[in-house]
Amino acid sequence: MSRADLSSIPAPRMAWWAIALLFAIAFSIALAGAVALNAGARLRASPSTIVVPASAMTLVRGEGRATPQGIQLEATGADGVGWVVAPDSDLDADAYSRVVWRFAVAPPGRLGLAMTWMRRDRPGTVYSAEIEWSRGDARIDLTRHRDWIGPVHGLGLVFRGRLPAPLVVADASLRSNAWEATLDDIVGEWWGARGTERRETKTSLRDESDQIAPLLPVVAAALAFAVAFVVWRGRRRGVAPDLGTIVAIVIAGWLVVDLRWQTLLWFGHASAWSEFAGRTLDDKHAADRDAPIFAVARRVRDADRPRGGRVLVLSDSTPLATRVAWFLYPDNVWVESRRGGRAAPLRPDALRKGDQVVLLLKRGLAWDAARGKLVWPDGSSREARAILADGPDFALLEIQ
Image (cartoon, rainbow, N blue to C red; front, side, top):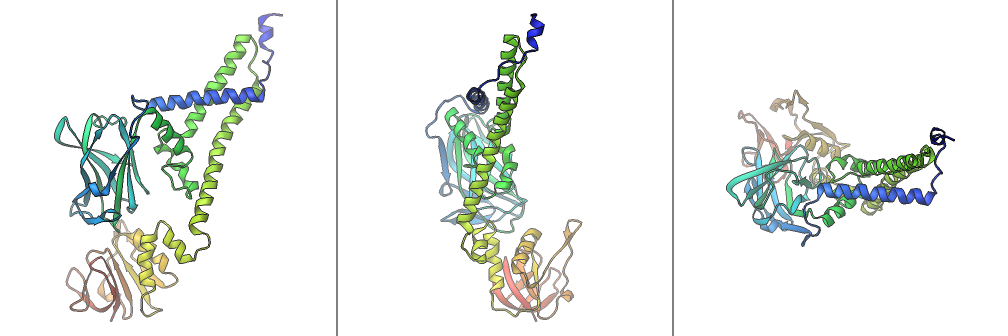
C-alpha cells in the first residue's frame, strides 16, 4: 500500500483522558504566553500591592474636604476640573504598572477621568493618561505607556466635568507586574474576583476588553495549539488527522468558557440574594448603587408636604433629575427635557400656586431664604416657602 493510500486512513482516536491532558497542556502554554506578554521582568515582588490611602492625598483643585471615608470632592473648579494628588507617593513604575483608584462613593457617569504623575528624572513635568471609565472603580494599565518609567511620584487623579453628586476617593492601589502577581490577576479577573460587581453578571463580560488577558483569546490560542498538535501527529504518522479528536478539543474549550459563565451566574445570584433577600423595597434601594440618589429622593418623598400637586425636579444633570423623579413616583413629577442638548428654560409664569420645586445642583435658580423667593438670573422671582433647604445645592420649595 502506498503512502498516499495510508494518508486516507484516519489516525486512531485519542482517549478522553488524553484529549483532556492535551487541552490542559495547550491551555497552560497559552496562559504562560499571556503572562509573558503582560508581566514585567521580575518573577516575584514584595509587596505585591502598594496602597496609597486617602489620608495621604490632597485636593488641589475643586471643592471638597477630608472625611473618614476618604477625600470627598463636592464640586469641580470653575474650569470644570477636580484634582486629587498624593504628593508623597513614590515608587518604581517599572515594577508597579496596574493602578486602581477605589471610590467609597462612586462618581456619576459622563465624567472624564485621567491619572497624573511626575518623574524623578524630569522634575516639574506632569504626565497624564486618560482612564477609560464608565462606572465603579477607575482602573488603568500603564505597562506600555512610554512615560510610565523609572522612579515616579506625586500620583494624582483628575476629574473633568460637572458633578451632580459628591464622590469620595478611598485609596489608590498599585499592583505589581511581576509574573506571580500577573498570573494571579489574570485568573482573578476571569472568575470575577476583581474588576466586576458579581451581581452584575450579565454585563460583566462587556468589561473583558479592559482585562489583562481575556479568557476567550487564551482559550482560542489553546485550541490552536492542541489542534496543530493533532494535525502534526497525523502527518508524522502518515495518516489523516482524526476529526472526532479535533471536535472533542473544541468542545473542551467551549466547556471552559461556559464554566466561567455559569460560575459568574452563580456568583451574581448569591451576591444579589445576600444584598436584597428579605429586605423592604426602601432597604433594597438603599443597598443598591443609586443609594445616594435614593437618599435625596426619600427626603423629598417623606417630607411634611402637601400631596397631589405637581413636583418639578430641576437639575443641571438630566440623568440625576430623572432618577430622582423615578423614585418619587406615583407623584405627579415633571423633569426638564433637553432639546438639541439644552434644557428648555423654565419661566416664573410656568409655575402654579402649590407647585413643589426640587432644586438639585441647579445653577441659574436660587432660593433667597431672607426674602422667601425663588429667584431667576434676570431678577424675576416667585414667592415660595421652604419645605426643605440644605444650602445652595438642595432645596424643596412650595410656590405661593
